[in-house]
Length: 213
Image (cartoon, rainbow, N blue to C red):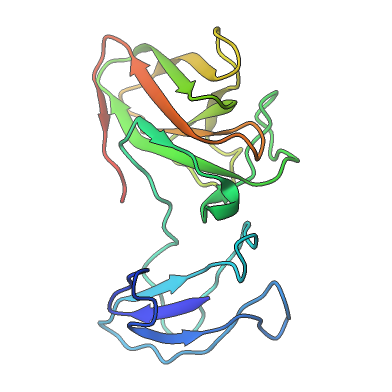
């Protein structure tokens, strides 16, 4: 765990570094430090594994007499043609819900994921969401109102593993509402399933995506 002031650039990882820690008092699996923080300064807390195969779900906490003004970033995109990464080298992973009933959480290993959204529609009607994965077995999940990978069963609206064309496609036909923001999550069925994909959302209404980041 590393903390930077003013700015952070992964290409210059020692610039603006003010504190770092590997193993905290709790040993491996914890990181902890104290740092003197001042008002009117932007800080960046970076969490990363010690080795390339060290990764997974984590929880960070910042405590002091003051308050912080930022939640951990969840990267969202307005790109329907994108890719999921090999989860061993990807810092955004989740334990996806079960495809069968949407319950949390799958007993599979953590998977990388891609978020399209938030997006809205301008007409209440049925829309077809289609995902074509390039040579791998993907799964799509649609969330309404909000999405948090740490609580993947909350706000889950619909999901699909294999579409009408079988493995390598996922599709759903869902009724979308103009007053709701939606989040389309593309991920793998298992840890070895990742790669490029093309998603589409089709209906007579207009789709508008406004990424949060």
